[in-house]
Image (cartoon, rainbow over all chains, first blue to last red; front, top):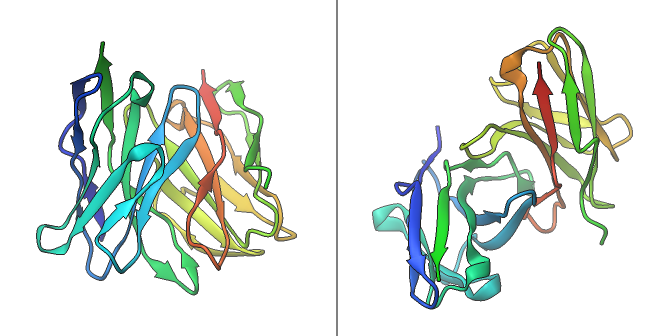
Length: 116
Length: 113
């Protein structure tokens, strides 16, 4: 069975500082990996995804993530955070099935707090 | 594209009552997914459809839950004899077979009293 671990429940970062959110996955085959962000009262928005190819992927809002197969990790980074980045961040893993993706397995999320 | 829409956005019901939620996916998206999210947790997969066919159901989907997508467009999720433990946000997502990314709707928040 696949699983996702986000070790940090809460992270506090000063505005303008760099950010790294950790994600470790367990999956028997090549995973499809995603990072989603959820703001209060909002739906889940896709930040970026990894299917294959270059292990460093760029996403929206200045985020990037690096897939490291040897460490089973897919950490999310941003060089300089803005107050508007405060939200809940979810890492997810899925698999390709019949041309599309099947149900995703999500981590429990990391709550990002931005200090002024 | 218009996004994924869900109706209602909020539902309060009494224990034992039946509730039904609706999801309208992005047009022409073949796949439609249902997830449940409880407070402080990530979304948990419930089931998904490809067109009209229900391809996978999670063990979380008890006999009280049923989902349909009769014409391959919108979907409904019904919970019979609701229990307080059913209180959660129910999320719907859709994707195409060309692009695997799942796009989520705003969710239906259910409170069972």
